Image (spheres, rainbow, N blue to C red):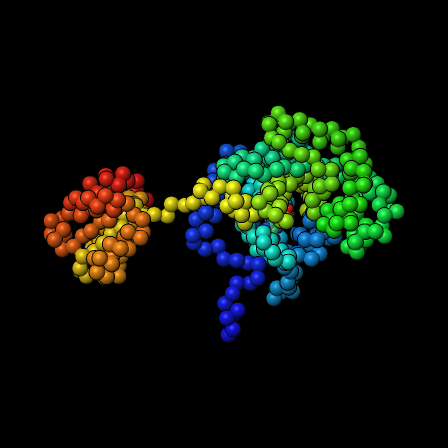
Length: 420
Ligand code: AMP
């Protein structure tokens, strides 16, 4: 086998220590904040029937056309590794009872997109996603944005900006498409090849094109809100007022459209300057999805955790440093003592003491060096002599002082009484 056989699949990196503890902290902080808002976790399968995505995300979107990992299983069924989380949650809601139609759910897990990999763009990446189900209502959208802000603040991530726009109600979509087509008609030949196709298939996406020339043309177009009815404008205004009342800073970006077909009314994106070209930290919006004979409405957002970490590292390295030091390092003097000390380690761990023990039968000197390297504030040393007396030698690694104690006093000294 060549050495590359042992590399992970391109764009699908491992998340290993020491980084994994940072991931865990981000996840647990987010879970605490989500609980304050009444959101409960849902874990949907990573594989879904392909149609779950094609029907909800939209057949002509980039995600569906170019980025899905789709294959046939042994039974000839077309399955897809989820490229995003909303569709699976909607599939769950469509099958659940009517009470699920106003559920507040969140998910946290890997998504898969076969994209060209680069900094901040992976083929397996993690999203924290939130879905507040229920009919269109501006204060609910504002609450979702406020929740997102709260999570970012709880992570200590400053410097992000919020951009908002509206896609209008479902009935506005036709008018927007017609309006855009009319405005773009004379400019059609100047669009890039993809946008020439988009003109017929999904004209809204032209506003999203990264091509310089297309961008310039997009800037000359009327804002999509101008094609919408009064209701859409009222909805958007009410949302902006709510956000102002909540003192959440935002800018309205008239060309923001977001890639997927299911959005209606409010759409938003959170950007961060530390991310460079891939500056989207999170995307969100209100949606309207039809699954079978159920129409499901809600609002939600998804944040890419890899990008959150890049931004955090840029903003506040210290806040992200983790304290992996054990409370105690156990050193055994003599071969016979090791098993006895292992028992002590287990007892202490059950009391909540983060405890390392050197089981290598190395010299005391080597074990003490390991204790030092571990960063533990105390070393617990026990040899035959201490065994006979029923005592432990507790060494303070900072000032070098030591005292002989019974185990109960060691625990008191460490300040642990919690049973685990
Ligand atoms: P989207 O579902 O495309 O709106 O993406 C929502 C968020 O997921 C983005 O703002 C990113 O933070 C993250 N994201 C999307 N695609 C990728 C990717 N290929 N690699 C890493 N993060 C991604």
